[in-house]
Amino acid sequence: MPNYTSEFKGVPAPDLPEEARLDPNLGLDGCPWLDEYIEFSRKWSPDSYDGYHESIGLWILSAVAGRRVPILFGKVRYTSLYILLIGRTTLQAKSSAVDIAKQVMLKAHVDFLLLPEDITPQRMIMEMSVKYYESSTGLSEEFRNNAKLMPAFGGQRGWYYDEFGANLQAMMRSDGPYADFSRLLRILDDTPSVYSRSTLIRGNEEIKKPYLALLGCLTPADLVQVAKVGGRLWRDGYLARMVLVIPPEGLFKDERFPDGEMIIPESLWRPIREWHESLGSFVPGCEPSLALDPEVKDAYYYYRSALLKLLSKISTPDFDGNYGRFPEKALRVAALFASKDGNSSIKMKNWAKAQGIVERWRRNLHETYRQVNQENGKQNSLTSRDKVKRAIIEKVNPTKREIEQFTGLSAAEVKQIIDKLIAEGSVKEIKSGKTNRYVRTSQIPKTEVSDEPEM
View 1: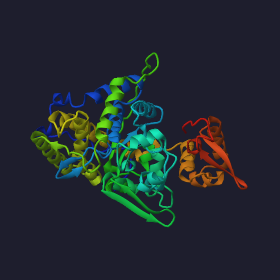
View 2: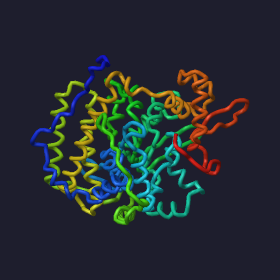
View 3: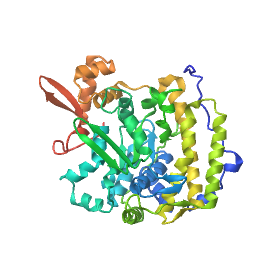
């Protein structure tokens, strides 16, 4: 493993060979809805990196598709996407761009497809399991009415997690409540026909036709310790399943917001609702599969061969999993476009647009690798405030003493930071026996707290 020094410049993304390149004009009409969404999101979240708008729009499509857009190509494949928005807090405006997507889904009445934001792997399995939907009495009438459109629907969900960086850190701790996410997310991305597990406490739990569309936010600092050169997450298939979206270092936007109130146009939300309803008429597992037009098959193989050739010339094996999955990601994106247009097969315009997007993701992969590993992460080190926030999430309602031990900060530093978080309303102090513990207000049921500011 190389030393991390200020000379680290990463591995630049090589250009595709001529035979695999496509004329960008081929994809101009590949998904008009996504083009309109990007323009709208760019207008109302003007400080956000352009790559965020595009990827968030795709996450909406992936979440709404559920497991209802199968692709028949060698085997049956599905359209789940795991997307991570990476950028410095505040500077890159990740959350404001995501808020627009949530408003579109709310307006289209498909927000019920989303899992709770802050959730443990154990709770995720429970919420997606058959037993949960058969026994639960707390679901709203609208939720149940929508669920009727999709038999076995509970196992096909979208998930947005603003604090995914904390999740990633906690996942690496084998004794923590989030440790099972490493294995669970890999399994769900492979979309097996059934996922089941049995525990002493909850007995047998089964997810039928599992499917997950993930959107997470994190900073380069969150990746410093877990995504070093030669790190396990590069080589065990975890990060290979993720789309890493990051702006070039030093890039930021300082634009003005438009006047007036943001109103989601009908041309954005109604097509999503209508698409959802048309997909809902099918029984999962019996949907008509999308085929590939002959020229799309050729383009797929040209692209795959080109990436394998490029990979053979890259010195590090850290990109092996990512490069191997880029053609699959392009196929999933193209299928979303084809299904959204009501096509029975993937057209060349769908594939061309999808390949262009995935090529941007490939360059983002290299940029992420460079930013995370330069100077051994010194430029991206966590602040004391971030360390305390991570401790509250990872230790699950810790005491001050536990936060001090976890972060290595002094008692005075911890007290000062906690007092500020409490004053801001993002942390609440709760009595537990003879001591006090600290919890994020977003983890407290809404009946106990009227406002839920983010940390």
